Image (cartoon, rainbow, N blue to C red; front, side, top):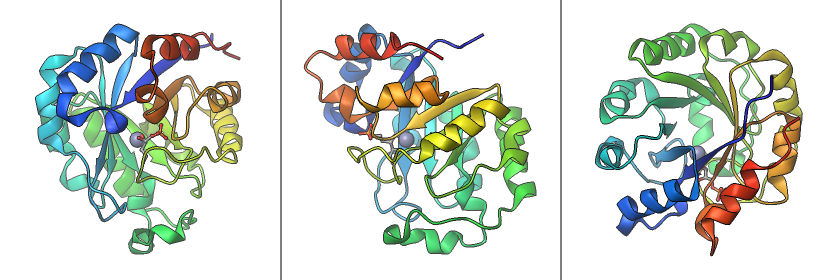
Length: 236
Ligand code: DX5
Ligand code: ZN
C-alpha cells in the first residue's frame, strides 16, 4: 500500500522574525511536518538553529517537528534535541565516517565515505528510539546507501543537494538511490533539497513520500496552492 505524500516545511527559508506566524500559516496551508535545519558551522559551512529555537516553536504546533542535525558530533546533542521537543531526529551518516574531518571542506562535496563506524551509528539510532523519538539517517548525495543500518531506522532522508543552504538545485543522480531504498525499506523515505514543481514528481516517482522543501514553499505567493499541488502528485 502506497503511503500518502507528506510535506515537511523546512523553515530555513521562512521569516525568522515571525516564526510563530510562519508556523501558523504553514499549518493552515496543509503542511504535515516541520523540518528544522540545525547547522553548526563545522559539518556544514553555515550556522543556523539549535535546541532553544525548537523549544520556542514547540508550543506553536502539534505537528511533528524534525530536527535535521548537520552538526559534527550529533551524539553530544541527541538528548538536548529530544528534550527541546523534536519528534524525529535525523543524523548524518557521514559524521560516523573515518574521513569526517575532510567533510569540513565544502568544496570537496560530494565525497564518498568509505568506512562508517556502524556500531556507533546503530547505537545512536537506538538511543534516539529509547528517548521515544523517531530515528532517521541522512545520506548526502555523494554517500552510498548503507543498507545494514536500515533495521534501526524509522526513516531515511536522502539529501538531493549538498547540505548547508536552502535554494540549491536538485541533484537528480540521487534518484537512483531513492529507487534502491524503496526496494529495501518500508519506513519513511524523505527527499530534501531543491524540491519544486519539476523535481517533486521525479522524487515521488522514485519512491519518496516525504517531500522537504524550503524555498519553493516560502517564496510562493500562495502557499496553500503549492502544498495542495505537491500533495496531489500521483504516488507510484
Ligand atoms: C539544506 C537543508 C534543506 C534546505 C532545503 O542543507 O537540509 O532542508 O532547507 O532548502 P530548499 O528546499 O530551498 O532546497
Ligand atoms: Zn534539511
